[in-house]
Length: 95
Image (cartoon, rainbow, N blue to C red; front, side):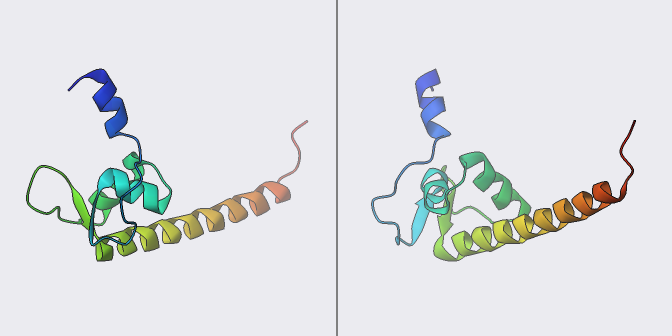
């Protein structure tokens, strides 16, 4: 693959139909509003098996799982941030 194709491969692309049953990783990233790298990471984390063939395809159910996982992770990150902010507020200022 050329360098230009590699760069395009990592970019989200708009699907022909946002409600289609199966989408590739780039279309899934576009629909969910995140990067291709994030989608690949979540697929690995959730142990989503790819369909047969060279391209990784996601079904509607897979996309729902990826979305819910992202919301759960974001909620946990918000909780950690608030705990750190509370802890930092209690610490005396360094002189």
